[in-house]
Image 1 (cartoon, rainbow, N blue to C red):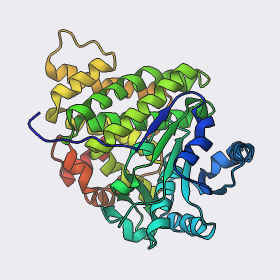
Image 2 (cartoon, rainbow, N blue to C red; image 1 turned 180 degrees about the vertical axis):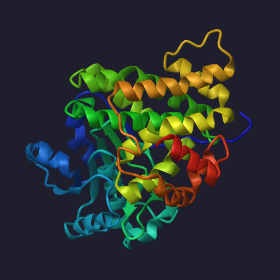
Image 3 (tube, rainbow, N blue to C red; image 1 turned 30 degrees about the horizontal axis):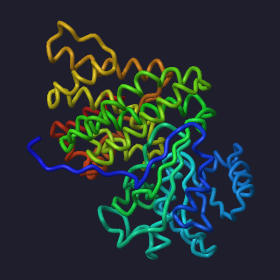
Image 4 (tube, rainbow, N blue to C red; image 1 turned 120 degrees about the vertical axis):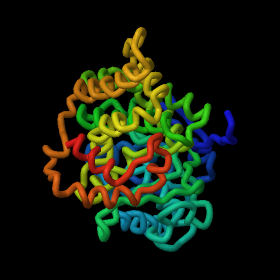
Length: 385
């Protein structure tokens, strides 16, 4: 408590089963008359486009659908979406899907209002002013993008990931309906769920954490570690799905306020250079980074072990902290994620260029509870191999 801290997130949060049915009313509350709906392509093909179209037809509201978003979206997609929004004179942007759809939607909103090109907005606080009102509707329990101030894209020209980071990216409304997550396949449920856990653990151990961010991050760790297995192996368990989406929301709030750490710095080049989905990249690196970070945050890692249900009575602080790494590894195994850098075709000869890019992702490294060098990063990649 020896520092000043603040706590921010989406302008408003609505959570609960059936909350999607409030969407039309929420649009009216925000003054929207012609929204652009940004959809994940796979979700669109799986029936969401028809569902959304039927919903708004019943509500008597005209919409424009932009459903070109795929995993790890290229930066140019934000410009394309903004052109559609401007041409159709849209006055509100809705993102429905996983983190990619929501990130594109947030970027489209600020580009439509401020003009310019997406590449000009990359980095911290380079967006000149507010965007159009936004509503984010997550369909996975993973990224927490519905409450963050970040939009992340692939720079194909540079083979790397970069993000826009600005308070103007905070959504006007986060609308979370656990029922929308019921049909997510087990593999995606697992990878996005561990991604949310990663956000919670990183934000809790970040040196930028505050008492409020620690509170939501710890609650996220408990909710996710207690419910992810059920969601993966029995996707129809609505109670577990509800708890997971709430955990993902809390993890997103923790991330937005305390930041992430070295896992994200090291995972970004895996997505930018090799196209590995963000959630899977974080999953592969999380145990190795936790193991490296142990000496920098023993007390916190011991608390993580307890929150994840690991008996720590009678153990030394070092032993209790180490159990947190084992608990995460067990959860990953129980969710059926058996990939490694090796099985994904990444070779040890690729590590030096991965390290070079990772060390440029400076903000998460600055939050890390233990100083990390290029040699340390190389050893972490080897550990995750």
